[in-house]
Length: 193
Image (cartoon, rainbow, N blue to C red; front, side, top):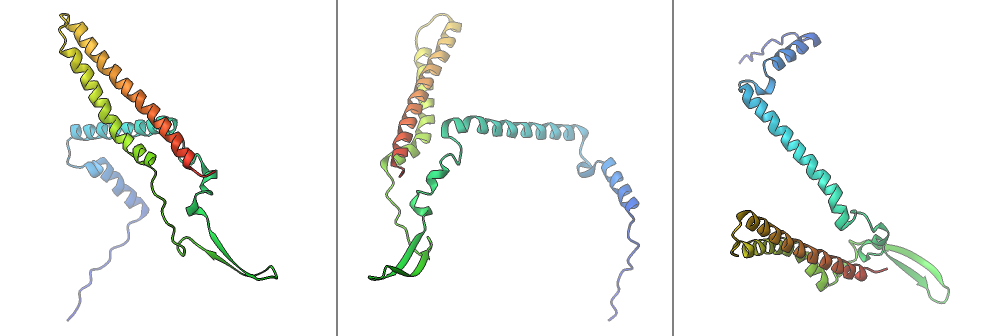
């Protein structure tokens, strides 16, 4: 059987490739066939998502270190964590005080027993879950308590409801913040020095 191979045409030159790209871009590129309104709307949505991402990153960089500190704030203490230490075995000749051999045992060779988790750590892990629930309950209760009260002026009634909900939520947040600071002091007291 005879195999038919297509004839290879001449390779396009750099000028032809550039012209093809220009025609492709002028025809709409990847957005060929879509209406201009859709393309503009898609651009606005993309810009909005980019701005939202930048704002979220800025908020994380500004607010997270204030409450939790930098990620690598205690690097000096990392050497004191038992998992980061390397065990060394020395074989010593009795009465001569001479080292016969030195062996380094890595972490994989020697199993490490995990210490029990202190109760303060368990409470500290539950705090980020409990705090938003308590904030929502406090804001709703404060708002509903004022909303059910018989105040004849509707503007004053709505304003007092918002103020009461905000005040209770702020109180819960303050208590949560103080609890978190106290628990963090207890946790830092557990770290070996």
